[in-house]
Length: 314
Ligand SMILES: [Zn+2]
Image 1 (cartoon, rainbow, N blue to C red):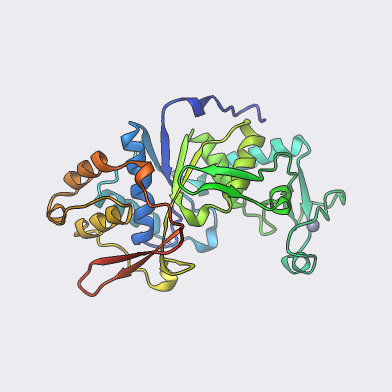
Image 2: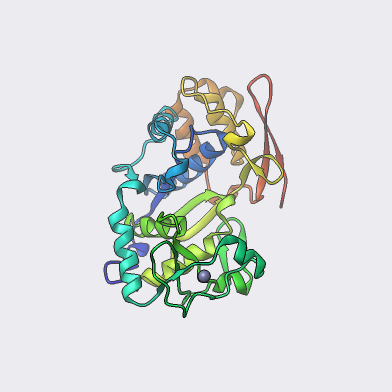
């Protein structure tokens, strides 16, 4: 446990968040994740924060963060407090890394992806005792809190292989970028997030994040992974498969479609109402327990602008 952090906030009032990567405009899949976390925060009388996950600098597109914020605004998803940008928080991440290092939990690793593949794909503690220089090498965290299974509020019990649960994973990459696993957990602690509602594509890394929470503060927030919107089985909606940016000038149709995706019985006439009216209606209807529990739901955008859904995996 690190001195600067503690888990007391987890028993405090609800704080949720939406944390997009600004690698492009918001599409229908990201709207679903934003809306689910927003509505869950609202019905729990909680705060809803927005954080830009712009640490993976090569993928960040100039102007995308502002475009995402304009879209959230147009869809009535108004956030609490200041937007946090990971790219401005290097000192915080470095500080946590230094503390982990002082506790002797960090070590350099020179294994290439190719070398790992040849040794079976999972890192095998090869560099733990080698005392390499950090220069030009990745940094790994000694795993002291392996998580073999956890319970997701929507997806239920999730199991991990022992090898994956026990792996010393990378917290700083060879190219000097902080790893996603590290920054996302440090930010969630720093922002005192009590429940994480997000897309089911992030279900697999969750055990690792819970283990880091336990290493840092001895406890972890609740997780709820919402069905993922896919273009076809196994392929989430993304720029790569031509998911269009959602319309900021006429938000009602996509907003109502996203609510239908979340299982709410949206009446047809609702989409002629204002955005605040639609959201007020949604807040009266929404419960986390009633959300679909499928890992994936296939989304087709029909020619008339309507969305059609096929529930794929139970
Ligand atoms: Zn290594």
